[in-house]
Image (cartoon, rainbow, N blue to C red; front, side, top):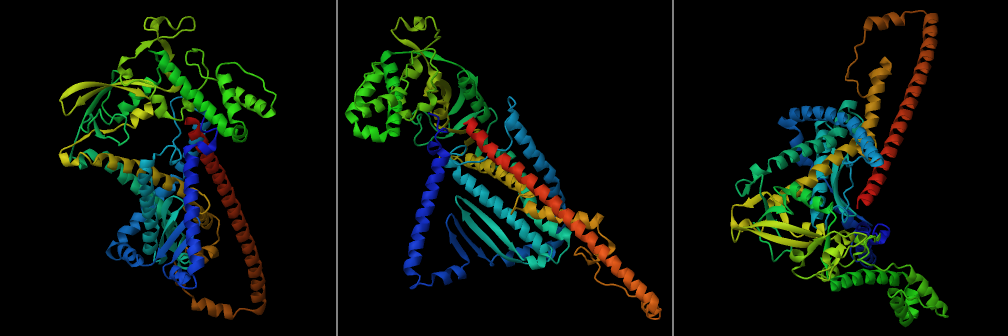
Length: 602
């Protein structure tokens, strides 16, 4: 059974359910403590003094202690630098707006069309699905660093524009940490629109810079780590062996992988490519009848156990009869019983298809029926990986290649097993050894950690810093790029929503406003108005008739101006809503279809 057909058994949903359970237990304990001790301890006062907020799936606090530090960095002798820094950054951030929209459209096109050899550029990062548990720390730290740098951009740009910030906050939402800046919106409304835009684009700009710095550091990792590690372009070393590795006793840190199944390996990309080449091949091997019986029993027991879980009530009431019915099904001798409960069990068990590995026309997908890889591995001998003979099964006579040894030719692709012959240069013995591995590609991949670095000092053999370094930046760059791309478009409660409003205000002020509107706008830089005293005296000596006519004409002019202003605001509101709705639909489709595509690939 495919795990995606049963959402509760999928790793992602299992992970989410566990996190929800932990949060409910944690929040329930805190709630009980609050109810029991709130009269003895001033818990509300403590939460208010520390600006701590605790809710279900959320913990956060804010502080003003960092305000003075950020202000000192933003002002003084560095103020001119920051002014041009954010001025350039605002234009670069705005240039990302059409690129981000185009990226969403292109990604949807790739998901719908599914061209050969081209993968979507946007993929959700989901723990338990495409992020291993051991890599979760890299993801969490990357998100935290990206958000801190993002919010620091808003804070510094705010101080550069002479706007104070109220506080800086940190939070933990579900499983992800984050940061926030509480801006003083009363001061924000007093500054010009261009200053406001620089503040709003400050976070996106800092995420762009973080991506560039991360890429440069990742590209120059061989130089940065050269005092401690030797780097080679054509040598792939084993730098780590997990505790549960299937090859723990056969490999040593420092060994070099030369090839896999005659496919030369020079780096991690070559290793992945060589593994995929083997996966694309259909291979069959001669195996004994005892091994075949063992494998079939594993699959059939999985089927029966799955059926028993779906029919707990019937099985609990009729354990003896159910066992008899299972035996009858396996022997293809179905018996009828008069008891209704037994008939129900027979009908349920008849839906099970017994696995017959000898059937070359077998259409059953056994890969997704492997619930216990350890039991499947126990069916093979220790030396089977190096002694199994390859054969070619045919529909007419698939026993001929194995008949002499009284074995049968079985297609190993049915249950995703492969034989990987690795050529290893042993560091301890200074010679080339051949190691045969029987199992799935994922099991082989999880058996060691490799890169092109070799430590210069023995003390560093147990610390794979190049791997940690590369893994961290491999997560930091896409996470920071994602924050920049999705914060610049008009998604509700994101920076892009405010950026859109400010851009529209600048456009309508520039091309659609009268002179009076420009003078009264916050973007006007003129603080003083020169008054012509002679003109005032001349106006005071004018006739009463002319003054009355001018007053009536001015009232008509003001009413017409007000009408134009309302039309512009209405048009601005319509354009803003159309863009926001279009962006939400585009972003929503991208998220939903990206998750579906992730499920499809899995």
